[in-house]
Amino acid sequence: MQLHFELISDKIPYILQGILTTLEFTMLSAVFGLIWGIILALFKISNIKILHGFAVFYTSIFRGVPLILSLTLVYFATPQLFHYDITALEAGVITFTLNSAAYISETIRAGITSVDHGQQEAAIALGIPYPKMMRDIILPQALKNILPALVNESIALLKDSALVSTIGATDLLRRADIVASDSYLYFEPLLFVGLLYYVMVMTLTATARILERRLARSD
Amino acid sequence: MIEVQNLSKSFGKLKVLKDVSLSIKQGEVCAIIGPSGSGKSTLLRCLNLLEQPNQGVIQIKDENITSPKTDIVKIRQNIGMVFQHFYLFPHMTVLENMIYAPMKVKNISKEKAVAKAYDLLKKVGLKEKADVYPSKLSGGQRQRVAIARSLTMEPEIMLFDEPTSALDPEMVKEVLEVIRNLAHTGITMVIVTHEMGFAREVADRICFLDEGKLTENLPPKKFFAKPKTKRAQQFLQKML
Image 1 (cartoon, rainbow over the protein chains, first blue to last red):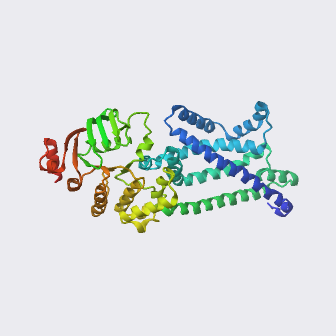
Image 2: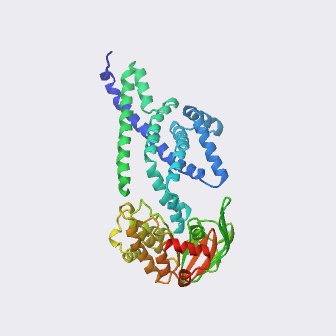
Image 3: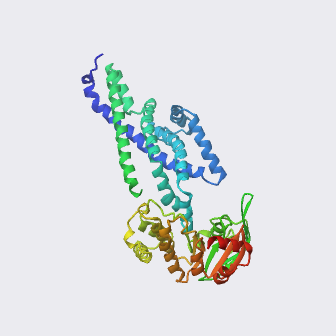
């Protein structure tokens, strides 16, 4: 078998632009997903039964349904239901945010319970109100404990972002497909974006290691 | 200052406190002693509502803190608490531990909070440790910082929950020294402790708890000379 990367060399800048699209989806979804995930985790540990029930039910929905189904639903059903012409970026970010929040809310909840209960008592005894206690005392310790799991989740998010190619967003995978069908060459563009995904994931992993080491200062 | 009336507390079926009444005057140092499981810590933790009593009334400075209308967060700012296991915030330096609550709860300026923190650190002999993380401190040092951290809120009442029980023996002295100095400042203190010698020397009053009941409430001289109940006599024989 012979590979002819030179035949797609003029398409490489076009494919590379897809990195921006992929990163845009991933980063927006990661940030919103983390925020929504924290809120869901707080619901889960809340004494208010309705909030707790909602968060548990919510998680079960996103666990029980394939991601590509939710994505398709959001993208195609939104215009029909709300008469709003949703873009692929919006649909992708909304779906990934909702989905990833469901998963990491479980991780964050575990992270919060892993923090010694005495930390909470010490904060209460100092008269620190609940929101400040959570934000400044408990969550920083919880997030530090679950950092490796959060990195895993962002890696999954980065790779799952390839699903947006099915709703017409021109991310890395979609661009590789376009180049492939233009040039009748399949291996070369797909291998090339595969390499790009790999490098991005490795960069993310390395960054996480540095972050972990920085956070370990107080150990 | 502290008025406890007919306090009862159960955990499930287990009755931990049975009808405890107790009155502590301003500036008084009260030591709570008794066998393990007698409810000492639970009584202490009820005083700032870390535990919610099932029955009874607790008044702090004539305010009924067990009433749902009371803003307990506000009351707690006036009650410092020191725990057996210190509970310093591990992701903050000693100084950050000490300025957080004054700045974020009392809205005191950073300069003032830092000055106050250094002042207190000097008093507990740890000024040079201000920028160190708690993990780098010994147990005794951590407990001294924890005491200093409580004092940053300028409480009128201090609660100590077995402050030396988790310490290596050679570190007990330095922590007791800090508490002893504090007792002389006129702050109201309630101390749960197993250090009998310390209780005898520092406390104005000894409260002996046995199976959830407050069976003795005497000045230390009388208590250590001869407690009224047989149970307390046995306890003292074992401890001294």
